[in-house]
Length: 371
Image 1: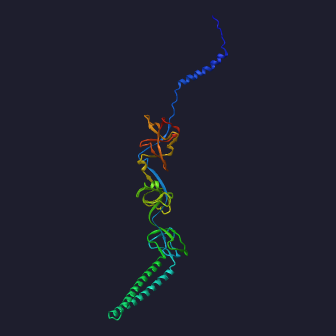
Image 2: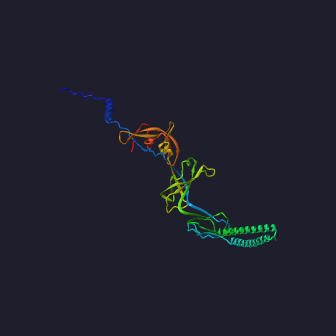
Image 3: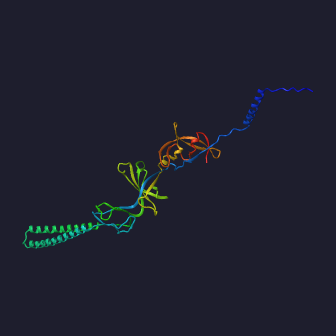
């Protein structure tokens, strides 16, 4: 029987085997595991439609009645009575305010006395003229006497007419001491107090007549050419939330205001609402289609990228795999920054899909996920 010979393995060789065996096992595992595919980034996009170029502009204004009047006295005097109150509904003929009419009543009496005197003088002059005509016919008066009598008669007739007009004016001035509503209306403001001295033409009250309202705004010169009468608008009020009123342009100014480059425009509110009244802050929104006609669109600001190479957006093109697309850069030309976004004048057309979210993690030619 042969004798077994035991050989001792050197310590260095044993240590090398201990290290190499795990490495061989790890290498075999790596070869068996397939490589991971790159993770696709999700993005969101907006579809450029034919009306994407329409842009909106909003301007602030104050509502007022379409028939709003600022009332004043035609004569000066002392206020003796103000029965009207702010917010009161008045019917035609109701008293708003009254002035002390004592001095005007005296003027009426004086004008009446002057008229009576003129009428008496006229009767006397006419009688003298009639007698002179008879005398002249019998050759008992000269031609000069006849002409003088005729002139005196015509003069006193003119004095009667003048005194009559003076009496009418005095009576009118007396009537002007009473201020009444000429139609059904509501009192918007009262600007005088009892015993206050007011001058002719000074505003004493403001009234709103009727149930139709309008909003006056100032439009910059760059847009005034795009606004026409009867152009539709949308009107909103902070005091009437969640309600959008339809309206239309009723007036367009042909001259700017003062030294500014703005033009007054009046928008009439269509319909009524119980909360509508004068003095409410309003926003009037216009929708302009000029941008769409030139091929431009309005995009969110986040969709546009600027870098040293220029200004561009990302366009997604769907692939044959559902839910996946390829992104590509598209150079664009920008217009104005608006409340709705930024205008893109050139570079896009209807049907393009522009990336609006996820732009920071994509690059040109990358495959992405789309909704």
